[in-house]
Image (tube, rainbow, N blue to C red; front, side, top):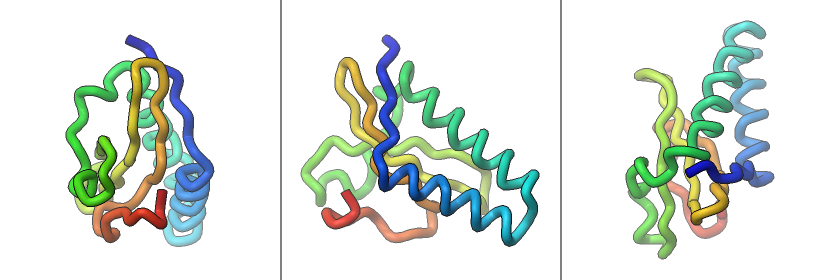
Length: 106
């Protein structure tokens, strides 16, 4: 089943921030590769959202928040999303070392 994928403003901001940090610390080429990898992982959710596990903080937030991991250690990012039969909403993209989401983050 293919769903519409919506990247909400906080997640868009996260993606821009990640790319900018990698651009400054590593290179423009690396930033482009990471942006493409994260975007592909997000796009993949259209067809596979239900296969991904519940996020650790889902119970605390009281929503069916799921997580899609992207990258390889030590550079792993968590794509945090919810989904229905028709739509995937991507809320945040965070490095795996960052704290869990809180209600203020959503």
